[in-house]
Length: 440
Image 1: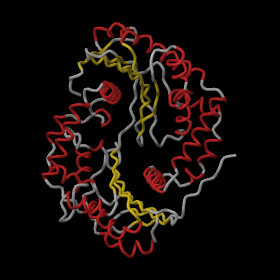
Image 2: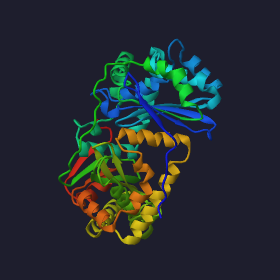
Image 3: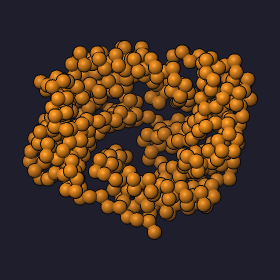
Image 4: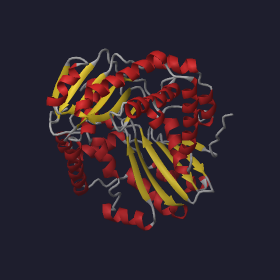
């Protein structure tokens, strides 16, 4: 019998500046967490200046009002508070964890950071240099390269999912551009603030409502929400990196987005095929039986409408064709025959247990509420999650597999030495070749 989860008592209000405030008091907690989420992400980066959202989010945390970065950090550190952030494709979240006893000191400071950031040239320059240094190392990594080429092939260079950070793009960004971006996109309208933990909502409102309303950025530019894409045929991409002893491989295609009506079936299907570690079909066939690779997995990456299904692995250069053929054979059998009842039951048990872990702690609860509100889902989606999963039938999941997984129309991308893997890749279709230093 599935269990029923109940969120703690929640109070919600939309302020005059458009800010959606959610308060979740929990006296069993020793601390307090505040998270604000904006409906803007890396998909909204200006064309040719990819990295703007990331830099803006980092710079927001470097001082506020008249406090420079060092003074701001000292106040946070001495109070035992810590900042955190998350930059997604279609959202940005910034938050603070604090002792409940320090909320009168720390929350106003956090909110000043959100509503009146200093955004100094000096701090921007340091962050920009850090980002460029990291990119120099990152963009030559085989795992990064193969993913970038997969998404470029899937979405194209005009689609936000097909555009990426580059050293050239980051160098074009100025502190003035970041300040303008903040004013245009980081608005209380459509922003959600969750305050959760040990606090009194009435006292919180009495102390902070006027402060919250002072955040009045009104240039609410429309954020980019990526559209779905269709991959009509098989495509093979080779990214030549001569010195590698192993090749990195991604195979995949488009997938439904987060608001897909049968997203739960899609997640269960992926768990059975390649998301379930050693219990998955891919691990059983490719690693355990063939012994061709140490690790292999599949995942579904999704935003509101845009989504992608990816199979990822690496193998010795001499084994590339063998591994790809094994993956395609396993995938074709999965799509044609679906899953078995026992596999479905195991996947359900994992999904229900994993959700229970995701709801442990007030921070996780706050993040789940943000997720629900962002995708316009009712609290009952989580509260009745176990029952929803239990009710998924074998017929429903196999119908979803037939409708959403396409073994013939896949993108095959591989990073490795062209001299060793080109002929192997030709077995799967015409090969489009690139050098790993080619710009995307």
